[in-house]
Length: 400
Image 1: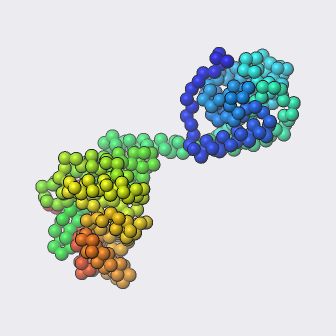
Image 2: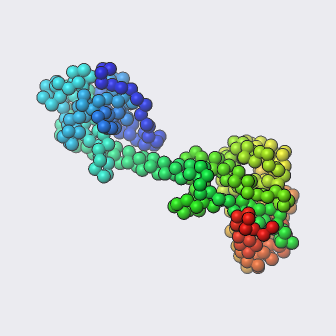
Image 3: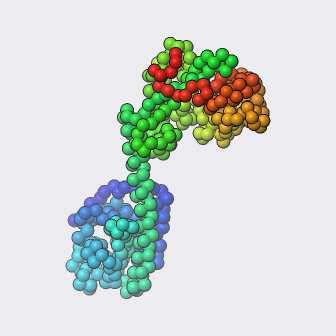
């Protein structure tokens, strides 16, 4: 046996794909009444067992085994580019002298090719038993061929997803390597005096394909690099900000980045009393106690909390009540047309009163017209930002 089997660690599929393929090979084994059913991945002159049902039976086949293709009955499938049925391997001239028959002890074999939609050969779907099997027929061959198409479809979906994930990871790693990520700053002004009180740091990505930053940060989160990319952007923003002006810098971070301590590490050594962490209301909070504990530590150093997108997120006012921010940012959906829409005006006024009870400041986002600006100032909104005031720009291009 050791002449033919070389143990390896196979690359496993995603959990959903694994479950489907495991169920398929179990179905093959049961329906064919064979000892073992398995899927192979053919690479060069070898194949690796990818999924198997019946491992540990008298036929020694297990996930992760890599076998020289020429020693196995699967080589007949590849050579013929067609299904192979061997009811008795010891008497069939195609298989009687093969190592799989004489050494591995396989008495019956049925295998079909697994081909991708482009015609390329992935491997085989097979079933074997130690004893000869007189019951297998062309109908069984047809049944296995149908299941092989299902196997190919599942594998192809996984492979496409894997390629997509590699592309996403490559793009994020390029940003982390120092290319393509730039920081701009948008002034946050006192609506009564138009004096800048702070600046929100915003990311801009210049890599191809050109997409909005939220999609790039979404890619980072999907490949497990969300906190790394957020903290990279935070460090760039802090490096480019002039704290000597007396204004604060507002930095966007997900609850996960704050809870993990990565945000605290990213701002270490900076004037904490000039830093605001913006936590979007859209981002899920998996543990409020953990998030509050991390925020308490930041607040002890002087960092303030802003809740972004207030009025448009999933958690609503309960989210704000749980976190008790020092700053509440009105979502652009409330700011837009607030001068002409009585419902938006009423909601904004209610949030102003709500913020007053919490002793929090209000920042209106997305102010785009003089009428919106004036209405918000009349409603008692403290601060605002938007294109009517100033567009985001590199620090060197903003008026100081």
